[in-house]
Length: 141
Image (cartoon, rainbow, N blue to C red; front, side, top):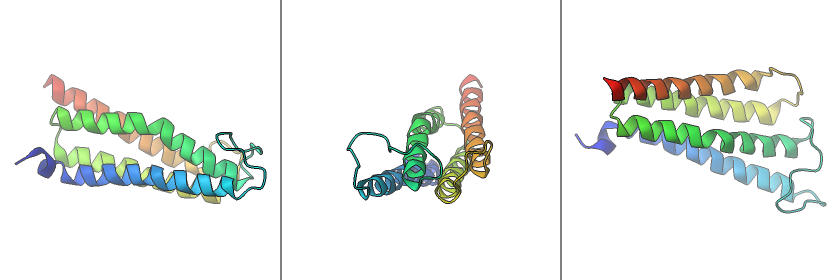
């Protein structure tokens, strides 16, 4: 079985993660561009979770901050030939958790920590850590 077929499900969820970040960029860019005083390349003027432009920007920024570790751990797992089923499951958990995190960030304007979105951030983070551990165990086996 070739690599792409063995990790087909993982590659699907990897594409979902990438697409999610691209959609977030589009939403954040559009929300900011709709403001009359928007300055390209600058963060939103109002730095408060009560402002949708700020929440859209922070959602995208947060995903960018997490994208490298997520994609890195997925690629590492594939390269060390970690069990495809578990790689797919952990990648799916990351993708779905990040989507729920995004939707909650868009909907809930709160400065409270932890907020409901924090739990889905943590789920994705733990899935990412588990994927790295799975890769290390596979590599050292």
